[in-house]
Length: 151
Picture 1 (cartoon, helix red, strand yellow):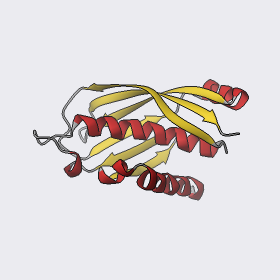
Picture 2: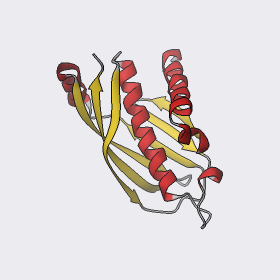
Picture 3: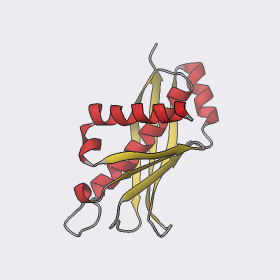
Picture 4: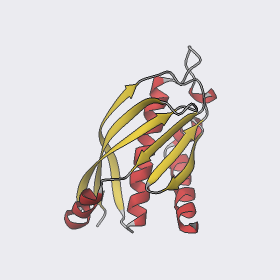
């Protein structure tokens, strides 16, 4: 459990140091368990003129949660690699008027990880979802993350 905590602490530091927008959005890691990463961001620095979460912030938090999931999986597999978002699409289903909570699962990515280890490059289709406090979904982000091993 300590290893996962340390990996999350390291990821949080990478975000804040290398992706300053994450700190400005007050983005934080909530949990990483069962191949699911959960993150949150305060509403106040991400609010729009309607008092709900700004669409760009929702996009960024979900894209970064997927990127973070990919980073954590690479760390767990002891792989040094570069990650970029090759493509991303978002669905805004409901306005978010509370803390932004996003989760991303790595389930079903075993073949892509095997391919990455064999060929040195891979593409991972990851979906992040915004969950409201009532349990309903406020939207989702589908991102294609391109990964290349640093050799």
